[in-house]
Amino acid sequence: MRIFGLLAWAGAAMAAPAHCAVTGTSEQGFAIESSVEIAASGDAVYALLAEPGRWWSDAHSYSGDSANMTIDARAGGCFCETIPSKAGVPGAIEHGRVIYAVPGRQLRLSAALGPLQAEGATGALDFTIAPSGKGVKVVMTYVVGGYLRAGPAALAPMVDQVLGEQLAGLKRAAESPR
Image 1 (cartoon, rainbow, N blue to C red):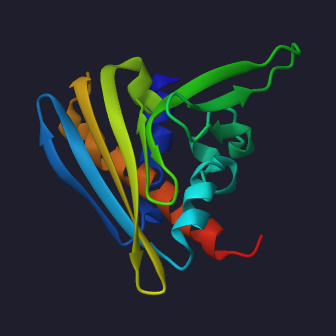
Image 2 (cartoon, helix red, strand yellow):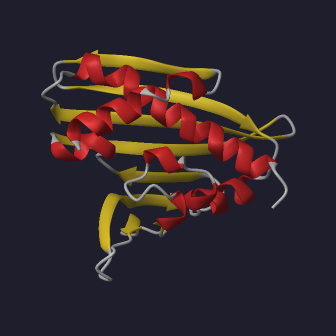
C-alpha cells in the first residue's frame, strides 16, 4: 500500500490549480499553499467542505469512492471514510480530526493524509475562506512535521499536487449546478 499510495499521489501532477506551491521544506517537514477563486458564497463553500464526496478525487481515497468520505465540521469532528467489505463488516479510516471550525470562514484539521499516516508525521490542513471579487478566495495550507522516511523535500511536491487537485475539485463542485 505504501508504494501504491505514493505512486497514486504522484499521478495527480497534471490536475493542480494555478496557484499552488511548496512554500518550505526542512529536515523536520514541509509546508504547501494553494489558492483558488470560487464564484460562490463563503457559507456555500464552507458547507461543501463538509461534503468531500462531492469534491475529493476518488483516486485519492482508500475505498476508491469519495462518496464514502465525510467531514463532521465541528471541533473534534472526524474526516473519515468507510471502506466497504465483501465480508459485510466495513472498515474505516480517519484521515483527520477537525480542530478549528468557523462556518463560512475557516476549517482546520489535524491530519496525516494518505501515505503520511504510515510515517511518524502529523499535519495541519487549513482552509481559509475570504471574500474576493464575485465570490471567495480559498487558501489551503498544509504544514507537515515529523519523521518522513522518503524525506520531506521528496514528498512535498507530490503532496502539493494531490492537494491542489482536491482544491480544484472543490472549485468545480462549488461552481457546478447540483
